[in-house]
Length: 323
Image 1 (cartoon, rainbow, N blue to C red):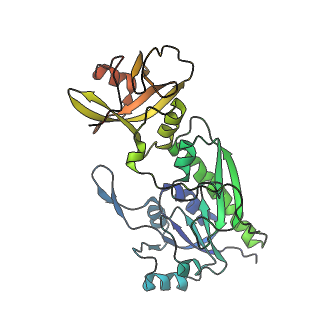
Image 2: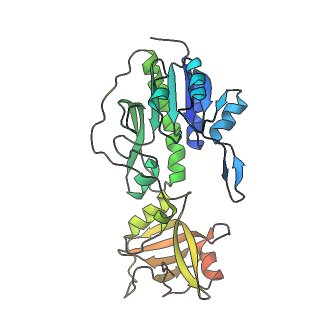
Image 3: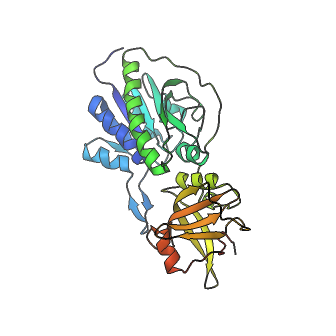
């Protein structure tokens, strides 16, 4: 089956998919890029193209942005390209069978988890929230159900204790591109062995903003992992009263203080200490947590000690209340 260059239709949308597209362009023939329609984003809600579209445009690759993947005109264009492979990396929608079957060999997907763990749209976030110490990427043949296809290749990677969703996404984008090229070479050489998924299965649902609300009754480590998992989006948050108003505040960075002893009778959500130039310590359901970086509505991120000085935060303040 060896062929110098495979004819590929690439489907992807966010920054995570860009490195894979760039690697494919160096090694194979990318006949077209399919991505999501331009959408409003940022504070000004200006219409922005997906990152993948920008790379395709800069390299003169035909771009398709269908609202409906079952649109006959769109499907006819894809079939006319006679793709050997359809490669999907974080496209954002489930592909209909008609599109999956347009590939001469088959359609494959890069998923940023060790399937069958963390199927679904937010595997990186949930791996961090759940305190996983290892993750990886899976190259799978696209099947009938989401993230349930036969496995071509997997690569593992340790999660650094300092990783956030942002840093881990970048690392996995590089590992995923490496795995994708390796898998395609196996396919070209006729050596790809499709294996059914085995092991513990779990699902990683889409993250809502409300999921970021900190519940101070949880352990310090659980809250710390929530902050890591929701950085850079949508952010973990809590609230505090200031001038008789309930103010939301996002928490972007925390440190574990597992051996802190000055707890006395503090209750979860209570500020128990101020650390100069670092931030403030909050009691949790088990242990305490040092809050290092915060952000108030409409403001930039700041060192938590600057927040302490600006809002005169003192010991005994309770955070996490609701109206």
